[in-house]
Amino acid sequence: MAHEGARAEVAAARTAAPADGGARLERWFGWVDTLAFLGLLNLLVLAGTLAGGVVLGVAPALAAATVVSRTRLRGDTQRAVRVFVRAWASGFARANLLAAPGLLALALTGTSLLLLDDAPAVLRVALAVVAGLGVVHLLLALTMDAHYDLRRGDVPRLAWTFLLRAPGAPLLLAATTALVGVVTAFVPGLLPVVSIGAWAYLCTALCLSFYAANDRRFGDRAATDPLDE
Image 1 (tube, rainbow, N blue to C red):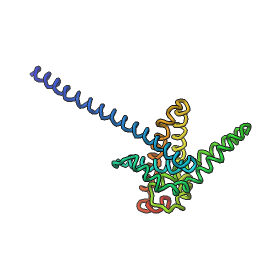
Image 2 (cartoon, rainbow, N blue to C red; image 1 turned 135 degrees about the vertical axis):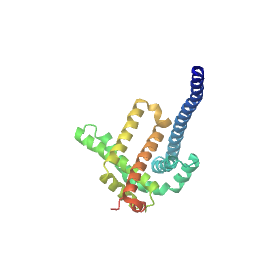
Image 3 (cartoon, rainbow, N blue to C red; image 1 turned 180 degrees about the vertical axis):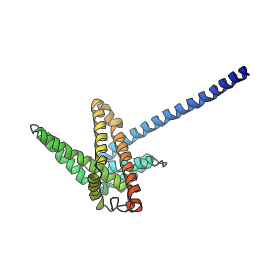
């Protein structure tokens, strides 16, 4: 009986070992697949930005990255390049109009920070806060437009309203942006490789989680007016 028990334990160990190895291999494959996706997304955003002449290419590139990231987060099969190019081309004008308030805030505050080298610390902090609000509004507007069926004119207003009514959302988005910025500052080589793609993907995931909570709160009304009360 003792020998039979020992043989059973050995057999169980041999069965468990391949299973554990398979699970580890699957996890490694998942990490590599995600990293490859983030690298591809990073490249697509850079290419889309350059294709629009930088100034007019930033918003469509980020909007297309949001669409691609949302599709992946929902578990849908996709061809990232094709989805990105289609979203970039079809939403070029709309994305620039939606992103105009956030990009304008960034441009003005960035220029002011560069010109006001000797400005008081309080003023510089205030300008940095305005720049952060511009980034958050940009992210909320683009992700909200991708997630909800909204009129173009309603998106900027609803993005501001969401920002003010759910202060936790902009704080998390700002913290994520700051984290990616700090890591990239320490390792600049990440910028052209993965930083932008990781930032766009993480921020899209955060925004979709905010909207999912909002949908549970308002139910069917959220499809037409996410902040209708």
